Length: 228
Ligand SMILES: C[S@@+](CC[C@H](N)C(=O)[O-])C[C@H]1O[C@@H](n2cnc3c(N)ncnc32)[C@H](O)[C@@H]1O
Image (cartoon, rainbow, N blue to C red; front, side):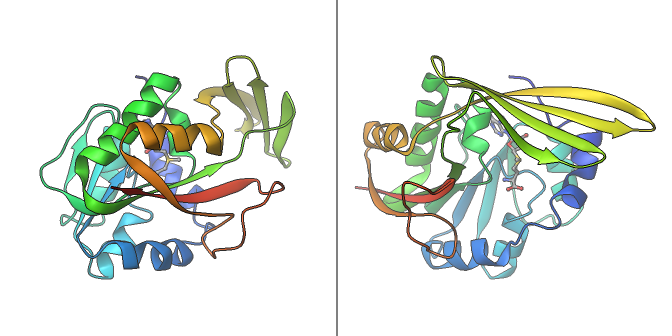
């Protein structure tokens, strides 16, 4: 599995995500985390560090050593296993496993996404919850998701395979650079089936962290599955 977050991407990650609100995420997750929390694809600890600061026992799994190194600059108190979340296991169980900011889409096969649910289930105590934040599938083959003087972002979706490629065109030092990153688009219904395969059932589905209602128009969802 390729590390798309190495080097400069990891170095600039916190700066580039600084405008994303974290408090509503932490407020949502905190009541579920009394028995500790495991973040899959923990990255630089954008969510995990403030959640740990609210008194939660945190652990993480992360593919990119460079992203984990950024987290390590902030704290020593969150253990991170470097590895693929489809197969990596850590010691202990938790009342909460979570995977935010579309990171399930970084796993580019259906089998791999099914395995992510198995990873979550393997670390959850009975009654524990798996929380996923992810966009709903695009409805057009090509969708512009960003347009500024220095960055143009275009998603390209193959409806047959659910393969999604995010093309980034960035103006750096006077030259346009292109980076095309592969993802796998997945619908809420398919995720529900993956949860069921892993012994979990849907408990809640919202349009956002503020618990706004999920509707046919929602462009993302925050879903909570509970291990039986
Ligand atoms: C968009 S970032 C999200 C990071 C963090 N969760 C956040 O919300 O800021 C996606 C993260 O997923 C990690 N990642 C991608 N594929 C992975 C995999 N198969 N296993 C574990 N981590 C993975 C990347 O290295 C990156 O840190």
